[in-house]
Image (cartoon, rainbow, N blue to C red):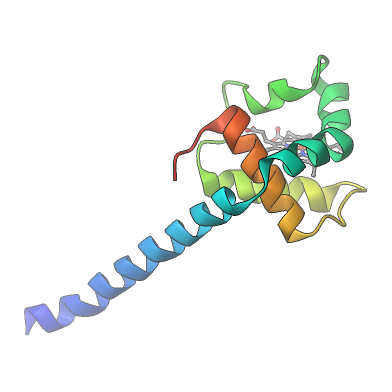
Length: 108
Ligand code: HEC
């Protein structure tokens, strides 16, 4: 009886695990070279006005984002909140891949 009750729990844990891997995979699938270009053209100007330099300090600040999911969400929010909100989800994947490769280094 007890084993039967545990089954749905185990199953949902598995589903959760799989969807997190799918999210991480989306980061790895992006094209970082294109993402780097897009980031300079569409994103860094505003971060630069906030922090000076090339604006990249926003990605290395002590309280920076700590998960792949958080990074993807933040990229999406910045895209929506700014006048550049028209970037496609493929372009956002490219930018996320670039930011991960250059600054965040989440492995999966
Ligand atoms: C009009 C201004 C503006 C533009 C344009 C902008 N951002 Fe941001 N961005 C911000 C602000 C403000 C924050 C800090 C928010 C906070 O402190 O929580 C931020 C924070 C971030 C962070 C979080 C860094 C961290 O680890 O804490 C990421 C990632 C990010 N932006 C990505 C992007 C990307 C990608 C684009 C281009 C698609 C973009 N931003 C365009 C204003 C902007």
